[in-house]
Image 1 (tube, rainbow, N blue to C red):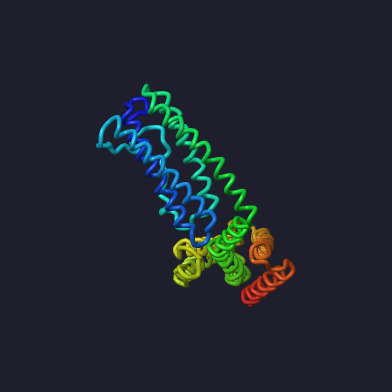
Image 2 (cartoon, helix red, strand yellow; image 1 turned 120 degrees about the horizontal axis):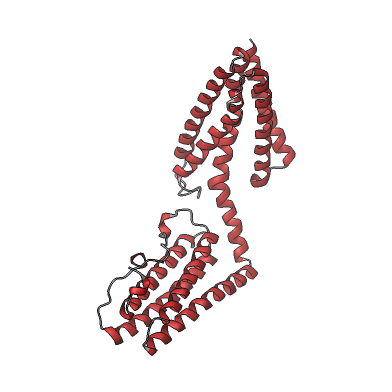
Length: 317
């Protein structure tokens, strides 16, 4: 169904269900954020109450003009509307993502009311739709004012710090653990195979097997270590996937050079890649784990060098 095909009763019915849906979404946002981000939850609760008020005014007008039965017409039934994903789909909802989604919803609602007002001939209906369009516009300004007030009071600063901690817990920590394990633990078997065989293809196969095997092992270990409910570390399957993929990537980084047929060139490039991997790990530890750079470099490099030497000694026997 196209928007241009709707009559006045259908336009009002669509507006009623749209306001109800927006109210539900804002309340879902508030509920999802209340425990960790109370300031943003308060904003969405206020916005939900505003949408309820709009819906009641629309229902009152519909009853006066068209009776008690309101047909169910939803956004997805009319071409041109953006489909809003239910908030419960995202278990790790972030305040800035919710705010961005709300801003888009307000813009869409304002444009809908402006277009609807231009298609009606009833004076009372046109006035209400114009009023709602202006109120949706004011919502954007009001939200900005609330954000500024919460920022001035320090509430948003606390939320940003909490969001950063959750990001570190749910993404950086499992990814870093995987990258460290993949980059360091695969060094010994890879270079042992390299110096024992001097065969790049055989070395590549050993590195590939070690990387994939370590990725599977680390992924399952991370996923089964904590369900995330009490620790706040998020969905276990997501952490396991991140850890497993980063473990595999860390091992494949210095394995891929052995696709080169020249053994000396492949080994030289692999060592360079290892140095880059260790530097990246040290930077991540400094950036997100508040580890002093020199301490991070010392911890990572010493461990990597010791594992490399072990592989070299075993392969050279």
